Length: 94
Image (cartoon, rainbow, N blue to C red; front, side, top):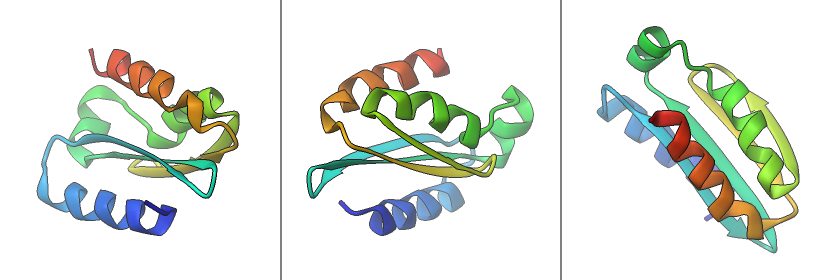
């Protein structure tokens, strides 16, 4: 899935799910794509910030990114790191 498609899915789900913490990762053309989306409710309740979270997760794919508190994107050159970043994301929500 390319980055634009992933962002589209993230925005749609963010509008439909009130307590959303979403991490989407994919490989496209040999590179890793990453999107983090967080509902407004979780941003307020848990003091979460998608931009800060994605910067930490993107290290696992040898990449970088950023964004706003509710949605952020990143790209990286190492798709092999996707399982590691997903595990890191799971630990964040615990």
